[in-house]
Length: 283
Image (cartoon, rainbow, N blue to C red; front, top):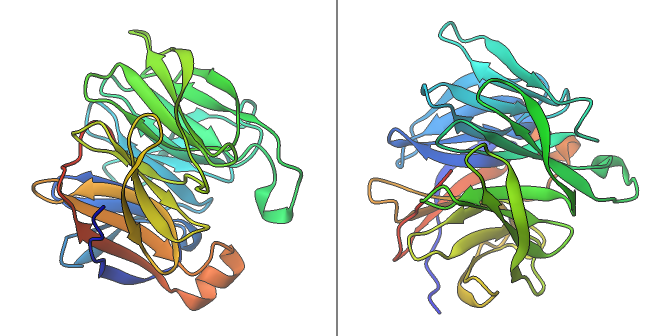
């Protein structure tokens, strides 16, 4: 088992989430600072837009437009040419609590998870759903009875979606039909002692998961075998394979996840390590 070394790409963030490699840069949400950013591998960063109700999951539609999950008001929005945000879909009536991570298929179906309960104020956890927004903006429930659906990936053939259930300690897979609907729910991997947050897929079919409670990123084979592990020394909240060869594993790390503290300390980072197997699929 390898132990690649992490180096800091970018610091001075509140709380990084939703990293995506796109057009030669790492795009991500600085969630608690209410902004979407992009950075080069050598840390040259740009603020792309402000999202007042907290950005999370990111993706691009088939026309190349940036889609953003606006968490607190539970909307999917699109960044327009003039820099404003246009509503794609309102999810308030179908998502029980704050919306969160997202993956967008090549055909333009956006799959969006949500907390399911008032996580920040200690409400009793309960199971929730994944919401699908079609290319036409139609909203439907894609899957239910999930334990805090978080990071998601789609395989290169577009046939399978895998989601990390943070409060289930499991990676769960679904078949994706041509109309974007999900079926054939099954356990992809049971995770021992790991809480999956953000995830990404590699070309060997393994999934990297960020584990905030243990400060690690783990590379998991289908069935649950841990193939690689990287210790971060602080909370690891999301990860993405990128770089020109997609062999750079970017990790969003932070000292904690309480918004009241992260915006004061601004100690969030984007860190990175070189790995052997390149990224694949979406996001």
